[in-house]
Length: 319
Image (cartoon, rainbow, N blue to C red; front, side, top):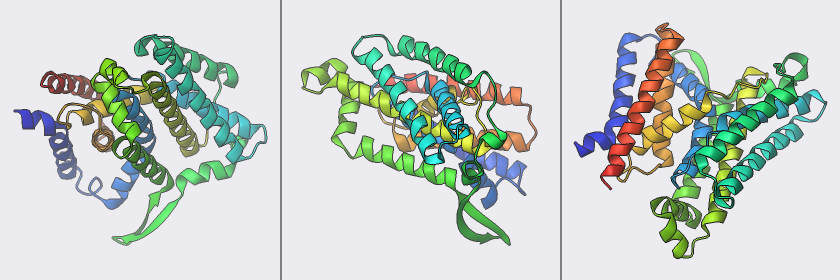
């Protein structure tokens, strides 16, 4: 029973892949479709990677979706004002980093519960996105062509079945972010200290770990990752609007929870989060190809979130 709980997410992922491969043999199991899936989940992968960082400490960030939307809006507005794409991207990243620092300070130094602090900043960042954009979508000539074409580009991988395929640029960014977070959490003292904080914050403090500073840095990195995801989304659709990142927060938390069930002690691990993201991405891709109504897809994703939370609670109860 314990093994079923631990590997339930992986088993579920394999089952979902087999189901759609049988139901959609001509489209789902193709190399092109799998590359499309990696592109479709790339924004969520980046945001979920950032969420993994704070959730290693037992915290979470409700503001990542609003941060992503605000970052996309800021980048688009800066480009519309005639600034270079690189400057606009750096400005948007700075907004995400600053938002994360605000969350970290409120949680670590002021002592506000993460739920309350990030719920407040989620509302604030969402309002800011509407204010600075005037509640409108920024698109068309306001967005430089290079910014939009980047998301559609990729590294050629050759031909598969007579069709040229390539690894999308957005997928490459997601892979690099996941690798960076893996190194940070699994190969550095910083990561080990975050897990120590998540295991017992008071003991970590008494052991000499600078808990407040590390929590602030973790939230800052999560905000930065959310901004990266928002910029990627804006590039993919060549536009930005105040609500385009609204679905990222719940899906990111669900992905981390789904992945955490694969850990022996139920703690978040970045490679397990990748599996959680792929579960959500494959499910959405397959159901879309089967023309399942979007509301039904929302119900299924909600059920997955409940399942993830339930399995996560069972795993932690065994600690």
